Image 1 (tube, helix red, strand yellow):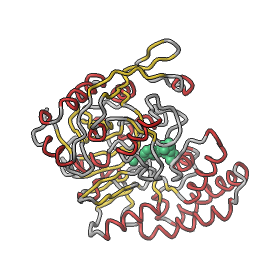
Image 2 (cartoon, helix red, strand yellow; image 1 turned 90 degrees about the vertical axis):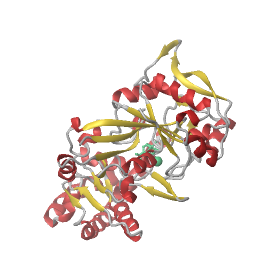
Image 3 (spheres, helix red, strand yellow; image 1 turned 180 degrees about the vertical axis):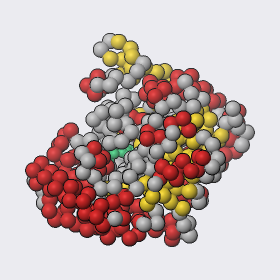
Image 4 (cartoon, rainbow, N blue to C red; image 1 turned 180 degrees about the horizontal axis):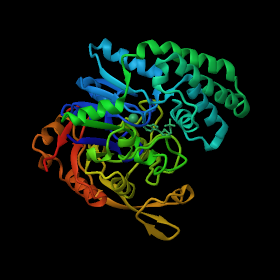
Length: 430
Ligand code: IMP
Ligand code: MG
């Protein structure tokens, strides 16, 4: 059976958690393959908000859960999320890759130290230690989940990390290295007990599902423009967010991924610093942020908001091989009379249709907007009633907006989310 990847095509917070939760019902297993606990995937069930940072959002559908080698695992978050599920009577059938790198307190501290060192060039990270953990992985001084289960392996890995971290702490950041390092490693060692039953070869677990004719849902974290290479570098996260990384970050064959669902919000948001061509400030921006409840799940920060960027979307669709789109939060745009949609960028007198790679170019791009007719601000019950009749039941403005996004991005819209609740979702038949 093929695998299906769900990836964000903007700057994260597109509503992937809800889409994954909805689709998970049809799959045997749900896996994460990138990022770490910087992710915040929110699901609303019966008015109750559940947020996952590390475990796949399929958790509450009682599916097999896999956390791949491409994820950096904060031990404290992992143990807490397992506990939370267990206290709800959900005993997760979970495998966390023995090759996944461990995020420790020292990584969270270094994240903050590095942000401070950068001053006005700070990335605006989630301070979850993500970039320092990936940096240590690349520097080959990291500790992997499997190391925690073997005293000799742990001692060896810990001594490499210890030397490196102390050199950075004292030499670069002028902070207290030894006590932080010692404390972090002690915490890691003591977490090992709770982990034996979940750490294993996640690649084999995922391949077994596929080989037995099962189906696998791959849950991407963050969004395309936070990708370490394709994002707005250096204002990006430290891992890959494209669909291709689902194979590398989990250990499954790339050709097993037959469907790629790209999740886009009907407008754009971004948290942290970095270029944002369609950003809308002032009253219109404030109203959109308030109506869309655009505050970070992980950090609570107000998100920057802006109009739909079809230049960015088309690029992400091509690179990630998106086979269909899930369009979320169309209800939030209700009541906007005329909705701008960015169809090209202007830079130094020329028009471009592909986002430039250079930060200094991207910062100078101006959006070229076309305007779409809006739709009324329906109440949740009105949306539900309208959606019962399928696409034709939705306001004409929504239908033409959907069509416009399909034409501009080159991918068909298959899912439309029009509210917070898990079932406020319309699936369009082919
Ligand atoms: P980091 O991933 O914590 O290093 O943060 C790097 C950038 O990615 C910052 O701008 C963060 O705000 C952003 N970021 C990381 N994870 C998420 C996410 O799950 N949603 C939205 N933005 C994110
Ligand atoms: Mg989020």
